[in-house]
Image 1: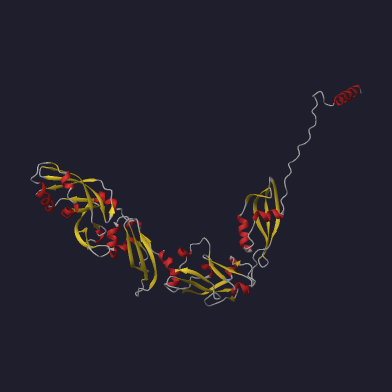
Image 2: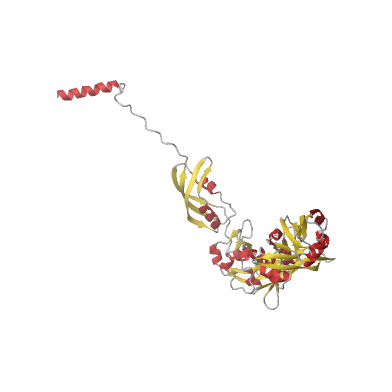
Length: 454
C-alpha cells in the first residue's frame, strides 16, 4: 500500500513540473498535409484542347496520344492514361476515363467531350464525299499511277488501297463542318470506275465513284461530280527515272553532252521493260558541269505511246580539274621540227623568254595528247568540230579509237601556259601548266614536256 502511494506522489510531482525541467518531451503538433488543388473536368478539357473540326475518331486518337505534364490555370496536371468510355459519332460526343496526377496527388475521372464534327447520314456520306491526298504521305512516289494510266488496270484500286493515300470527307447539307472517314467508314466503302481525266498536257485528276453502306455516290466529272484527286503525271513519271551517280562521276561532261545519244541511257536508272526515254532538248552548263535535259518518256509498248515530258539534270560529272592529273602531253616529229627550226642551232641554256613569246596555240596542234584511264592511255587527235552556236568551227581533241566508252573525253581548245623552257643536249624541256579547256578555267600544276629538236 505504501509503495502504491509513493508512486502516485511521484507522478503528481512531474505533472506539476509540466515538463519544464527538460526531462519530459513536450508533445509536438502533427505536421499539416500540403493542400493539393483539385482537378476538374473543365481542366481536362483545356488540357487536351481538341480542335472541334475533328470528328470523334480523330479527336479520340489525338487525345490518346497527347499525354504528359502540362500547366492548366496554375495547376500542374500530368495525364498518364486515357481510355474510351462511350462515343456518339452522329452527335459528335464522347466520354474519356482520364487518370494521372494533379501536383503529386493521383486522380481518376470521367470527362465528357462534345461539339465535334458530327457524322452525316449514310446518304450524305455517299453523295457529299470529297477526296484529298493524305497529309504527310508521298503519294507521287507510292501511289501506283502507272498501272492505272499505262496499263489501264483498275483491279488494285480498292477502298483499302485508296485509304493508304486518300482522305475522304463528307458533311451534312449545312456544310458547317466536315467529317473525315474513319477506318470503319472505309470498311463500309467500295470504289468503282477509277480513271485518270486529263486537264492539260501534264496535269489532270484521278476520279472514282464510291458506294457507302450500299448507297452509291455521285458520278461524272466537274465540281459536282465524283470524288477526284489532282495529279501531275509529269512529276510522277519524273520520279520513275533517277540518276546513276556512280556512272556519272566516271565521265567528263562535255563528251557526254557531245555524244548524248550514246551515253544517256547508261547514266539513268529506269525500268527498261516498261519505259523508253527520249531526249527532246539538251543544254550544257560548263560552270556547273551539268546537262539539263527535257525527256519525253514513252511506254515500251511497240507504239512509243507518250506518257509524260519532264526536265532532268545530269550532274556530278568528273571535274575538269582531274585532267590536270590525267592529261599527258608528248612530243612528236612535227613538234620537234617546229622547235628545232628555232632552237636547234642555238646554245644550250634558258629559253623561257623565247618560248613564252610564242602563242602556245601555234604549236600545241603538234603535241600528242593522251588521257590516262585505268592502266591504259587513251590517245587523242585534233578534230575540227562546229562551235556551240554552229556559226564557226573549233578544234577539239577526241579519242582516236571507236570505243564508245571513251567518247566522254572531248577537249575543246585546251590552253596551256609556259612557265619555263631550257635547251640541253638537243632537247628542249618546256615547263607548262594547263589553265583551261572547254571554255572553263583550270588551276593546273606544273608539268614538263620534253621536245626532241629535229
